[in-house]
Amino acid sequence: MIQDIAPRHLDNQYRNITPDAKDTIFFFEGNTVLASQNGDSITYPEYGDFIEKVKKASGTDVNETYDFIYLFCLTDKKIGEEPSQSDNEKKFFLALPKRKVQKGAFLGEMADSGIHAEYENIIEGYDFTGVNVFRNAKPKELAFAAITAYHLYGWYRDNRYCGRCGRLMFHGENERMMHCMDCKNTVYPKICPAVIVAVTDGDRILLTKYAGRTYRNYALIAGFTEIGETVEETVMREVYEEVGVHVKNLRYYKSQPWALSGSLLYGYFCELDGDDSIHLQEDELSVGKWFHADELDIEEDDVSLTREMICKFVNEHKTK
Image (cartoon, rainbow, N blue to C red; front, side):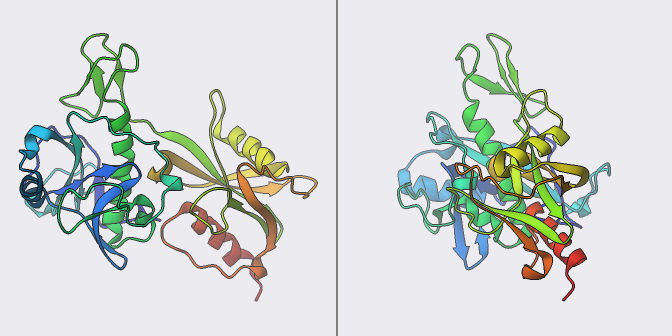
């Protein structure tokens, strides 16, 4: 999956530091990222290049017009190990305009992977590209870094002002949080629990297609956990809401951080319980269909929990 980047590790502990010339800068507008593409290979500006080209294009002092927020680093250091010179760290920062309210909904799942000329190209050699490009971008560790940066961008963008009193929020000095100096409101990054569900019946699996999304391939049933609900209850509710069937024998598989929807996905396999007739929730899905494992010719994409679960089922039940 996209987060499987061993032996590298994404160290997400916040540091109150400023960028160096070679550190990577992520700059987002709406559901796009400033990047340079060559086929599936994608690169992002370094801080030194970013400030030089922005100053050349606009004549402004970048540090007067942008906040640069430390995001995380890619490192060879394992969790719990002390830092060393051999960690091979690569640091990433988010560039946010200081006096601009960035508009747009956080809808990464609706994003495309095309060039968006409606956003002003602020530095030569880079374009604003739809964040769906992260699904196939190379190298994989940078794709995971970029998609995670997009998740944090949505949170920072939407919490510049206090939701309680409307005053400007300030970043915590020692941890990743925003706090209001007036009413003392404190806000931490938003992570939404959600489920990915493979409903099976012997050698059959229920596959769906989303309605109104750029992702056109077959997928599994998915949905967010509601207030007061266990993840297992989410599985049963979402399956019934989206395709009208009941399930039993729920088995947890794996989890995945999925930044395009700001979520942490919990993957479950479960079995059909009773009637297999599909009653589609058409505002969510365009297709819902049972497939025998032998009917499916599908390869792992090394990106999504959904694809890994489908491939696991097919490999275990295929007879041809």
